Length: 409
Image (cartoon, rainbow, N blue to C red; front, side, top):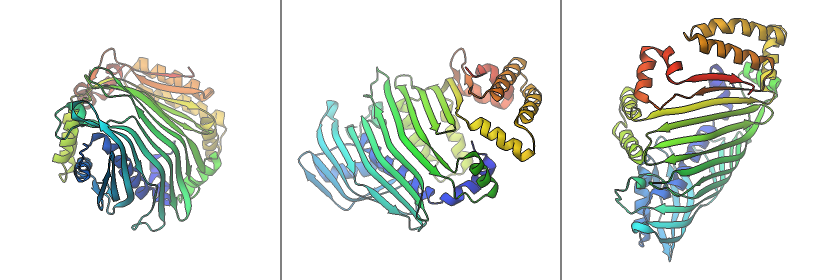
């Protein structure tokens, strides 16, 4: 929605978002990581195991001491930090309650709660992050040193964060409310269902420093951007097929961006291999990291994907703004686009797709409702073939992946 060339300037007024996002990532990891940890009657053993598992994700978990009482374990004065964080985030007392036996020597934690966090960065004194209402339910703790592939996957029933606020210079730059994640039980025979939601978000863009970006946002009426996020899908651990059936970001008074993606090969073993590869290339040049990830990607197959935008006034606002900047009418700008598009599409080397693209974009510009680009190959395409085609003849991927485009449908 906003161009890459303005990215650097756009982010300047929200410099505290960096520490905020680091804190969110570290806290979320803390909440979720318990799903891959192991419980022991000895509270200190539980804490040590959690610390070890947290480190598997390149992060650090620290605590002052451990208190145990019946089926409850409390990690006192807990602090967390991500791999690249220069400072730890104070979390407080983390409580694991209602711990019970589960099949195969595993344990189930009924509820994990994390106290509200109010953090001011030492590096960015004007940046403040507040996170409230952190909890996770139905956490499965596999046995220590388990060889079960499913033990490599974080398992829980529900996770929630009620409110997140990131401030800069005493002014809220970003707020998130009603964050949640729900998963069905993980099984080797039945696909796991999952959902993730952000009930509402709001970003204050009024302090953007770049004059052109600031003027554009004001003209479009997007100095404050609000909306919601919804995602859902399934994961079959036996063949590693993960089907993200819905990943929608809805922007109020603008439109909704919807993404779907269907991949195969992301098995628990694949997840394990990614973790190991990440550790092995830590500290090595970016080229080595890229080659390691590329090798792992060869194990995956592409089944389908789509990107769709449903307009809710953004397109006409953008066209009017662009036309005003050029001293032209919107209809003239649209006609110019229609005239240029066929020449640009011809460079794709696929006459049928070029025609469909031109037809769809023209229809959308005339009456902006929705536009969708979809890739639906006749059968799953290994990533090795996609990579080879991309290097040898990128234009061939349109046919290989079955790419189509439609508007206002």
